[in-house]
Length: 296
Image (cartoon, rainbow, N blue to C red; front, side):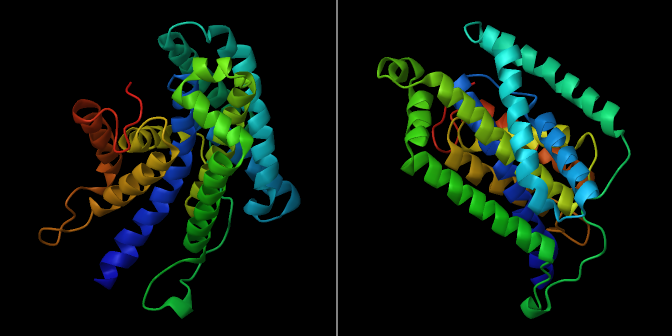
């Protein structure tokens, strides 16, 4: 039982927290702007490489310089919206989706041109499990990721429920035209959506880089799990995205557990296929998601 918890359940929760943070941005973008932003993963990658650069320049811990990377990435996201997405805002959603595909490739090319394609590390050295939690094998970085993700999720909850801009975001997500008629500045809401989504994306990317490594395809590889989490929870529902992210992360890890015999139920190389399978199944049988979000 302890092996199951240490090597499958805890990594699943860690991975689920990372997916959840990224999925919130996907869910908010679709709920308010009404299109699937395929550049979300590469915006995440850009923020991680900014964090890496700041770490190399200052020698500080990634979480200390991450706020600067979040601010710069948020500026990039707002600039992209103004220059590339805003002109298509009144066009069919497919136009925005195609624009986001092009932006995805552009951002990735810029990242590769500036930083190269070799693997790099945010945190060096090998960590030992926390002794005071024995027999649980919880690494300090995993405790940091889970704690940081919970803090950010609580902050998003407070923003959406206790602040004026948060309530405006929820109103715009429910009915953008009615919100505009009621006097809500929807352009401010859209800017805040990009800022919040990019901040959470950078946080997810930095947590992933702390747990593994930095490479140019990391955001793209998280794209399917993040969309799967957003669809599972209900598109446009941030709380659903959190639940969906946790479910996807845990199910991915548990799929490699030897439920029958001594061999893994699925090879670890098929973990990404688990998220894709869940996403397709939800689109077929329950496209509104667990929390009755928007349909694609």
